[in-house]
Amino acid sequence: MSDTYTIVEATQDDIEDLCYMVKEFHSNSPYSVIPWDEDAFRSYLEGVVATGLVLVLKDVDGYAYGTIGFEWGSVPFNEHFYVYMEKWFYVKPSLRNTGAGIQLIQKAEEEIKERADADMVVLATLSTSPEHVAKWYGTKGYDWVESSYVKGVG
Image 1 (cartoon, rainbow, N blue to C red):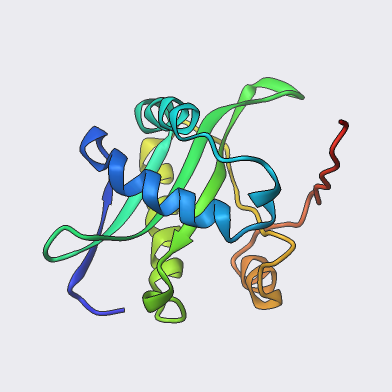
Image 2: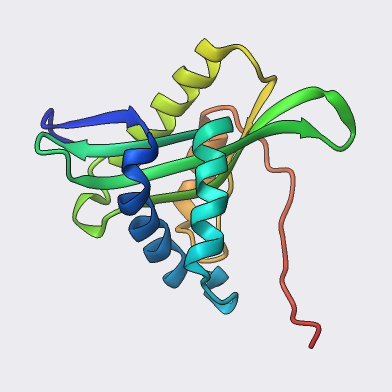
């Protein structure tokens, strides 16, 4: 990735770009079986920007090229144990395989460590994620803990 990109914490001013990118993430992911609801996502996103961690990868002109978003909270097993749980991770196709995604993760880890308000970071892979992603997470000290499955009930 070039030095012409920066990673910044999202603000309310980034909502439009974030909605666009997360909608792209959604439409190209296995989660596309769940209907997209723009208003519901905007409401959810404003909460995550306010209480979690949302980073945006931008070029020198302020154009957004990627994002990673984490909810922050305790886990069901221990209300005193806090985690940042990834909810989306998107890099525009033109910057994939450039290291931009790795830099988003590294910046998130740095910010979370600096905040010192959580015990763990939880990253996810999709059923469509390249195999090397899970391997890379393993090399960075992440342990595989869960796989999820979805089924309609209607």
